[in-house]
Amino acid sequence: MRLAEVVQYAKDHYDLVEINPAATNWIERQKNLKASLIMQHKPELLGQRKDISKPDFHNEESVKNFLNEMEIRNKLID
Image 1 (cartoon, rainbow, N blue to C red):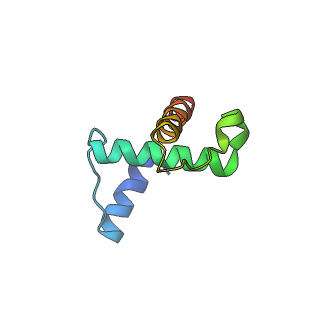
Image 2 (cartoon, rainbow, N blue to C red):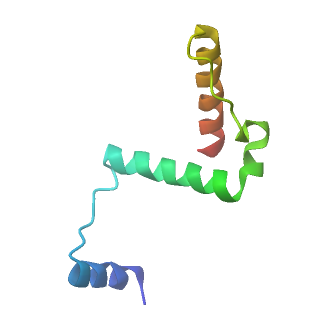
């Protein structure tokens, strides 16, 4: 069965609709899914950045460091 046939079957039997893959929401969901799968099944791909501790929200420098670490980890995932 080809992918097009599977998609058509889903549309016919489950009233599903395709979304525009260029939509920002869809792109963000794909990135989040990829990150989640990596963290669950292959966290070793992230090296030391697999466990980023929560910042002290009362300390601006701690929050900045946390956001920087998250940005680096997101670049590793992309």
